[in-house]
Image (cartoon, rainbow, N blue to C red; front, side):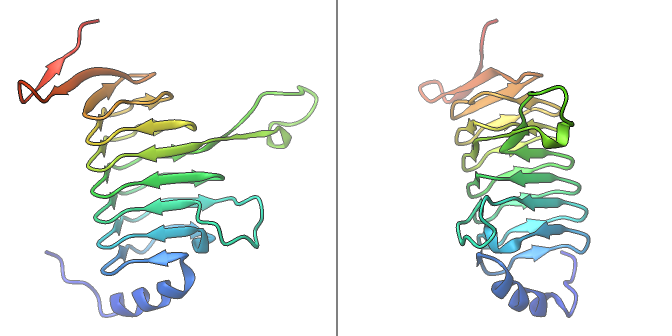
Length: 191
């Protein structure tokens, strides 16, 4: 295991005052950008790798409501992008591979006379169940619940709920395998 730098304990003490909640033994690598960290609750033993960007956009900037919950033992790999306007929950033991995008908001097409940046923002929520893994380059869109112990394939676009104990791939992501507890194995689905 790589030796942590001397400033690591100092950063953890500082972050306890900046974040809405901050667990023990959290390591946020240099190069991670988190705007408005007071809207983030981070669990114990969380790792956030370099060049990741976490953007929080509360309706009321004076609010103390948490928009992003990160559970214990979560790993967010390099160059991930997370954007929360409403609520994103990442439960414990979730692995997020590099270049994954998780958003709970998107622009709604409207008046063509107005520029895109002035269009109404549609918000929802995202919930990622415990022990799940989101593979390289996947995109999780608003109003999605990914169940417990799911695997989302590389470059998949998740735009609908994924049931627990499933493997989903593609754009849009569809379930291709489910865990059969009677047979104690992953079963490929037809179609």
